[in-house]
Amino acid sequence: MADQPKRPRLDFNAFVLSLGSSALIHLGEAPDPVSGKTQEPDLPLAQESIDLLALLQEKTRGNLADDEARFLDTLLYDLRVRYVAAAGKPRKGAAPGQQAKQ
Image: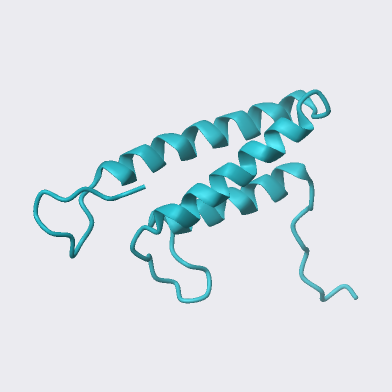
């Protein structure tokens, strides 16, 4: 048993981080863990991940430790800013003058 690698500690922040990582992958800002390649932004999937985190924030309000609430708030703010930036960028293959649709 001593040869088994240590697993990361599973807690609320790790769960939130996994959902946030999914949003970053869909925003095209992090590599896919399977392929190792960064994909083109998929804004609807990124929005779903962000909405899921917002739902989690709403449903856990008042029940989180201060550091957990702060981590979730900060992550959501960062993802929302990145989403707005990605939505404002022209997509590859889009006709000139066409913006990404939400």
